[in-house]
Length: 154
Image 1: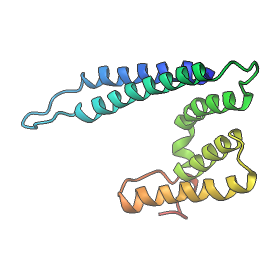
Image 2: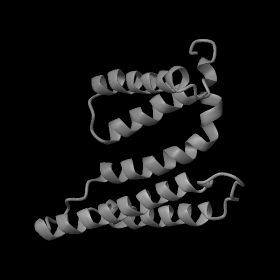
Image 3: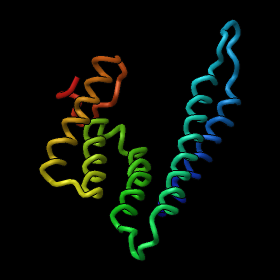
Image 4: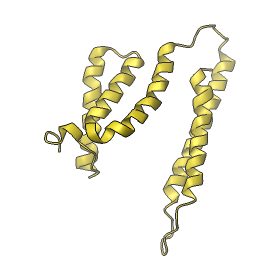
C-alpha cells in the first residue's frame, strides 16, 4: 500500500463526513420538496465512499504485492503535497491570475511531478484548461475569472 492511500483515503472520508455534517445545518426552503442540503449531502456521501474505496484498494494492493523496500517514490509524495499546497495557493491567486493562468500553472506542475514530458505538458495543459474555460464560460454560462487575460478571453 502506498503512503498516500493510508493518509488520503481516510482523509477524504472524513472530509466527506464534514461536508454532510455542515450540509445538515443549511436552512430548509419553504415550499420546496428537496432542500438546499440535498446536493451537498450527496457529494459528501460520494466522498465518504470514494475515501473508503481508496483505502480498500491500497490494502488489497499491499496484500497482493510483497514488500519491496524503497518502493515509495519522492515524486509521488511531492505530487500529493502539490495537490494540497497548490490548491491553498490558489485560494490567494485564483482571482488575480484568473482561472486560465492558474489552471495551466497548477496542471503543468502536477504533470511534471507525475513524470510527463515537457512537450506533453506544453501541449496538454494549456489546451485542456482553455477548453475547460470555454466550456464553462460559453457553454454553461458560468463566469470564471479571466484575471490577467481579461481582455483576451471571453
